[in-house]
Image (tube, rainbow, N blue to C red; front, side):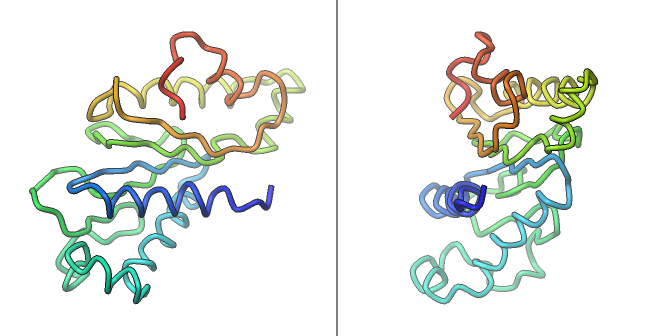
Length: 176
């Protein structure tokens, strides 16, 4: 906690991928939709206000943000193609990601301390719901055998969603 992993991975890796690869699409997920939107908000601000980024990558910056998708849960930067997917989409666990085919998912804190505490007390419904939602992400990617799902998380207890991801043989090779 407090080490900057969300800033480095969720914000930094997303911006890096968008700037380095044309027509790239990233999905950002969090336990809560508002938190995922907050991650996206910090990314939007970089494109809107970071003068260094704007000077080095003017071809990626929309001339008018009102002319592109620039919402609380999705944005589209300048691209060479008319790809249907937004450049970045934010979603909360359980939220609809159907129809989205990102090149990368970043899963940032999918379970909270409250969900972990409930599981310790024997109520695994939130953990199971999260695990099932995660399983549904991978087949929707642009290229499921190549594209990464990166996990940025705080482990809460043995057996939580993050350990499940690591230990599930079906998942091997898909989590970064």
